[in-house]
Length: 166
Image (tube, rainbow, N blue to C red; front, side, top):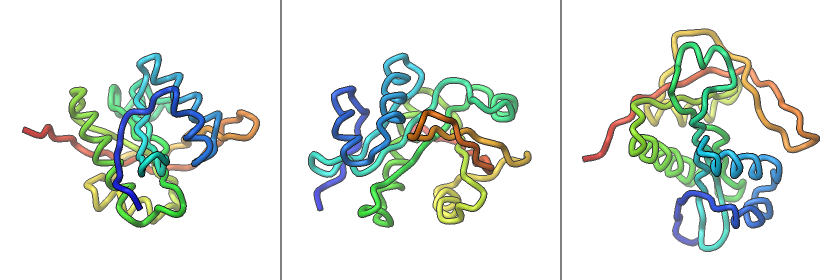
């Protein structure tokens, strides 16, 4: 196992991302959004292999409830770690890298949606200081890789205050 390196994705990374993680439509969409200044796609690499990703959603949330209660707050979106690299701290490293990047961009808070039955993810986020907002669950959109349809998940919204490193 090589050392983990996290960096912003480049359009030239698309083939490697799809080869390692699939989801061609998702990665093409996020690279396009990144190019338009709407977000940042961070990739975790081991040697020359992508092993995980997280997208920093900087545009207004798609869900009305999130726009209403958290205007201007960026969202962590689509955290994933390759199956053979899970439960080894890589997700935590990606989240921390995303938080640092958002703080560098001047954001004071970050939010994310976690599907209500995903207890493993909820425990990770709780350990990292994310707290559930005081509002109802939200129907969140998830981009599928099939025929281009948006899926719906019922999600809890978690929020964390960011601190700038000195």
